[in-house]
Image (cartoon, rainbow, N blue to C red; front, side, top):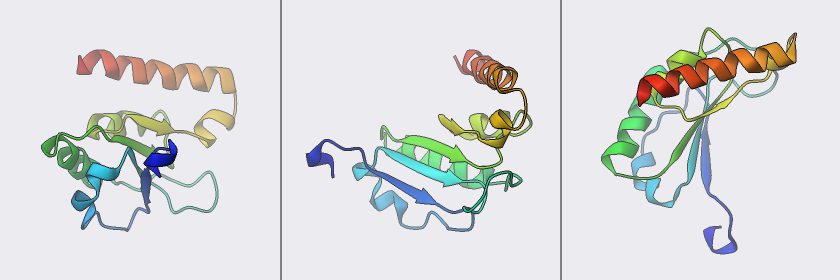
Length: 120
């Protein structure tokens, strides 16, 4: 995959354990942790904070440059939690498109910016 110029990633459903992932981190560019069960939008966030923190620590221990993406149930109430736990790519659907798109994007961007300043 990488030889063809593409990035490599793995996706994990909320109930799928990270067992064995440490053996593949060197080959990965990104890990996607789903925080809802795939299938449809508007679902409530499933707390994957422990898994997210474990993945973040695994990446740090191996000194890898692997991005962590979280998708599902991300909104103004859950974004701080996933950012603090180690996510660096956020996917938000219903939280953006559910009403005033411009306002929703601005509010999520402010939360991300605020978190980034705290992390520095």
